[in-house]
View (tube, rainbow, N blue to C red):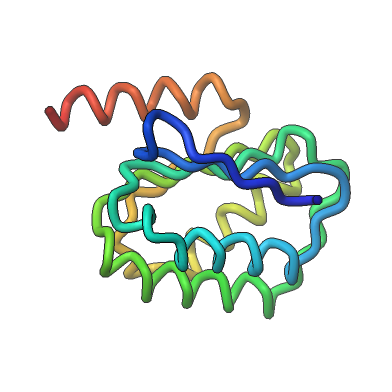
Length: 130
């Protein structure tokens, strides 16, 4: 499966692992499954980890759909942390495009080059919120 889903930290976090070639349809399906899950409203953070992604091929139409989904669903969980791990320049640029398309989304979104930096940010934000 190109996009795996793992709930972590007793269900307060979710990680989407992108592996191999990932298409827009696969990404939309995985994101939709998280939004449909009963745990979604209780999530404190979400990590999209593209570290093991060899080819990331969503098109602009897919990003527009994802941005609309994020804007709509962020109303059910405003303030959730969204960390996009995008190690390559292309992935990073695509993450910035998604961030721009999702303007008005109520998530707190940051883009990182590595997973450790994303986790450090999440830990800091969760600790300061307590």
